Length: 225
Image 1 (tube, rainbow, N blue to C red):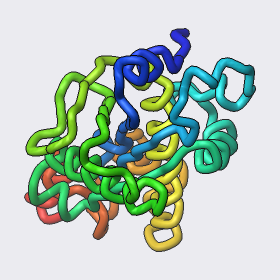
Image 2 (tube, one colour):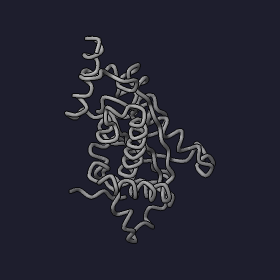
Image 3 (cartoon, rainbow, N blue to C red):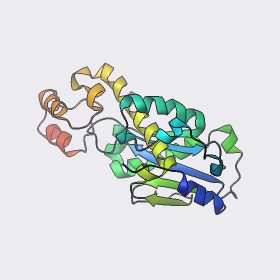
Image 4 (cartoon, helix red, strand yellow):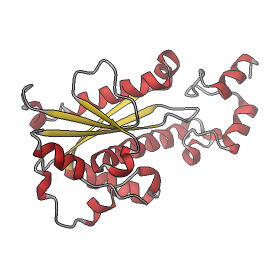
């Protein structure tokens, strides 16, 4: 397993960047619910000082490699040690503009939410900032300097932290949705196309928060399920 580090963030700060923002999203693949993005900045901007061992900091890695219990614990730790922003695009937006564009929009919302923090609002526009995001595509129509990093959630600590924020936030939303749409089992699969989920879709048809533009759901809508 690759270990995420602050190496890239440190390198950027040594090259004059004053703020380094990590971004990642959760929920591109599910058939229901929102896509959620997290954006984070380590509160100690002098990342070179982060050389001492903090067990929780060391545990921060790609959210998919962590158990739900680990993610929940690290979520609170990240909220304490990082500035955090969250952006959400619901199922209606996904159906309207497609999942990729909705993911980018959620990322923009996460950055906007991040800079609502009073301490960050004081940053002036002349400060050098870099956005690091997971994947091979940059956010379109976005004014901040950015770098897309393939498997960034596995190797860049700030992106790993953002992935945990996004995943835990989305999982909580889907657990809440389970209270309204309990027959679909959203508390277990979080909207992904598991066997159980597909069987319930065939039996009951889509509910309000299903993504009608996604093929397995679209087919059922067309057949009048």
